[in-house]
Length: 155
Image (cartoon, rainbow, N blue to C red):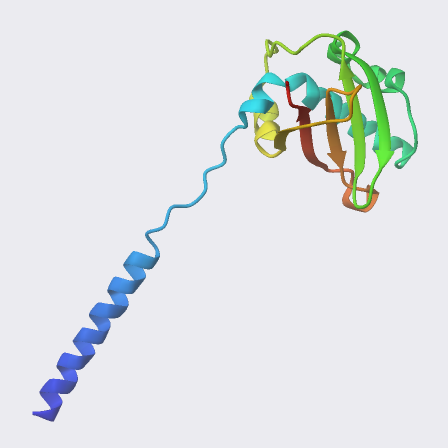
């Protein structure tokens, strides 16, 4: 009698363990999706990558919009932006930008650029008065990685 009840108890434990594993593993995982802000602001991604290459060349030093425009072979930065301003903060470098005209999002992008847009955090927030947005970069020890892009909230 003791042997039979021990087997029954073992089957019950096995069933509960299996049920727990199946229910515990049934949660969904996050699928990366493209930000709705990034699709309309591809020109900001072009600006960010050009600023990133200037930061690498100058090792975090100062540079002007003219130097950033020289990095852009497509002419997007020269046509869409009129001012940038760099500011070092605690933990990151901020690059504030001002657009000439509002972005209309009609720039063709390829798959590699689409993948880069998915990896960047985009937020809409209040930015300092004369600027339309802010791009945050890590410092040089983290290779000036693009941390976050903040777009000015329309009132």
